[in-house]
Each structure stands twice: as C-alpha cells, then as structure tokens.
Length: 491
Image (cartoon, rainbow, N blue to C red; front, side, top):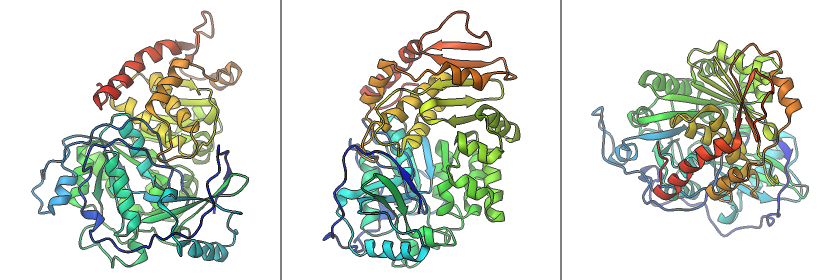
C-alpha cells in the first residue's frame, strides 16, 4: 500500500454496497472491435496495473475514431476481429499493457499496513462492487486518452477479462476513439473464471485527510498478473509495426513478464517504431529486482528513443542529483536514446539531447489534484515528437497539459479539456525562478541551452538562448485549434 497526500476539491461519497453483480458477459470483450464509433466523452484516470496506480489523463475534445479496415499484411490466419482491431493504416501511439480499472472510494481510514490485513480488507471491498460512478479507466488508458484528445490516433495493446469491469474498460476506449488490441491468443488463455484472467482492478482509497492509498490483487502476487502470456501475437506485432510510437512504463512489469516486454521492445526496434519509456516509481525496485527485471530495465533504458523520468527517478537510476547531468548520463549510456526528459513538478521540465538542453518553467495554476499529471505530460511529449515541434515548444505544451490536469478534481473523465490547455497558454503565467534555473545550468559543458521565458531580456547569460513564451504560444495555438476543428493535429 502506498500513501501520499493530495488535495481534492470535493469529497467523494463513502462506498456503500452496490447492486451490480460481477457476472460474466455474454460476449467476450476481447472480441470487440474498437473503436466502434467516434464519440466524444470524458477521459480516464491514473492507473492501477498491479501495484501502484498512477497513470495519465487529460481531457480534450476527442477526435473521430480511426477507420478499421480488415488488413493483415503478413498473411497470418487470425480472427477477423483481431485483424480489424489493428487494421488502422497509421497509429500514432500504441501503449503496451497496463490496462486496468480504478475504483475510487472515500473511506473512513486507509487500510492497515500489514500484508494479511490489507489482503482481507481488499477481499471485503470486492464482495460488494461499488456503483459505476466510482469506476474509471486507469493505467495506460490514461496516456492513450490524453494523446487521443490531442488528436493522435491511438491503440492500446493489452488484456482485459470477460467480466463487467472488462466491458466497462472497452466501452471507455471505444467512446474515446481508441483501438484495442488483445494480447492473448487462444492458446494462451487460462480458464476465464480464474482470477489471473480477470481485468486488473485498483482500489484507490481516499481518507478524510485526502491521503490516497492503492490496493490491488497484484500487491499479493509474486509473478506478473498475466504471466501466462509468453509471446507476441501476429496482431500485436502488426499494431507495433503500424505505430509511430510504442509507449511502455514501469507498471507494465506488474502485468507482463520481463521477457515479453523485451520481445515487444526488440520488435519495435526491428520495425522502426520509436519507443518511449517512463520507468516511474517502479524503476527503483526494478533496479534491485530479479535478474530478469534488471536485464529488461537496462535494455529499455538503452534501447528506448525517449526516456521520461522525474528528477527523483533520474537520480535513483544514475546516482546523480543534478537532473541535467543525470539526463546526460542516461543519454551517454543509451544506444538509441535521443531525448531524456526530466519532469520537475511545479518547477517545470527539462529536455536533454546529445547537443542541447531545453528548459521550460511550469505554468502557475491552482493545484487541486496532481494524480495523472505525469501521464498527460507524456502524451503531449508524443504530440511534439511526432509533429517535429521545436523542443522548448514541446516542453511548453506538455507543461500546459500537465498543469491543466492538475486543476481538475480527480482524473479519468474529470480531467482537463483542450479549452483549458489553450486558456493556460494564452494566459502565459509561468513560474519563473531565475535563481533556481541559473544555478541548475551553471558550469554546464554545452553551448546549446534554450530557456523558455515570459519576457526575453537582452544581456542575460550569453550561454543561454532565451525564447519568449508568447512566441511559442503563437506557434502552438494554431495547431491546437486546427486539431479541435478537424479532429486531428495538423502536421
């Protein structure tokens, strides 16, 4: 169980027994072709893979669903639904694993810390499934929803079960215009009544002091939740091949075996798909995990095109406290690494390449709930990467998306709208802290430092190229407006 404090604007009602039974659905959710219709709806929330729940989120008008044509370039004999589900001509972003349903409840107190007591607590919660108003799509659904609402064509690659929670997750993805590609093949499937087949749930518990605790069945499992999956199907390979970006995060290890994650990474590299990796809090435990976990983490850090970490996570993986130097160390140790992005919360963010450093202060907002800000941030980075937006501009829009999310109460379908992102960028109110940033870049051995400033002041440190925020905003707003009008991002 992991606890931390955030401030929520309004409390959620306490959980009461629900009349919703957990019966198997008459249709297998894995056989749904998504998206079925281009609807506009809310988003999703953070996430729950197996252990902790944090994810992505952002709320902007969704784009029309991508067409799903029956295409199978490799000639493999597969079920029609699987072929159609990955038959999109172009996928901008595909997420790997980490699909779950978050159940967000107010409770009188957080669960006890002992393993046995927490397990009993979770079992008691499971006896009376709460009303659907407490459910949200979580995990990598959040990053996909955020990206889709920025106008990117998205697919989720993963597993959901046959029960009511799996149906809910698929409904949310369909309504957001996101395709779903099932990872399991007929030969992989265990008894659908087995707990290891069920959709992953994360109980997101909020006490009267607004502290959060997370609890899921994977907290009590030695092996990944879906350890019975051991290979990539032809449909999954097709989805990866059709994608510009494959997004993986550390929570994926809670579901999928290290070997399977490395298979996906290696295949993406083979077919030229860019890989984004955000180790998250799991990075530290993977660093001291099993030999297989350590090998997979090392492989991801070296072979990913883009690494995204908080400053604390970067320090835990490199032993270097300065986030810029930590980013440069990760670049130096990488094989394919092009960008290392350091997320610094209310300070802002940094993007490090082999030849440059870009720094962007955060936008000033009234923070209500920070859950999911990092995931929506990642979606905006993917937006900038795909459309070749200048680096400091990419950080600016990512900061705005993350800040807009923080202004909402909770995540999921309650997250920020595209209108809110545009409003923040127009206001151009950023958290400039010259003393902090000057100290950070002092004595850096590079001539390519770019800094986002509210106003450009002549004569400041010649080492730094200051870019006016208003100029960046004037370049970004047309793209966002075109996206809102056309349902896609202008290239």
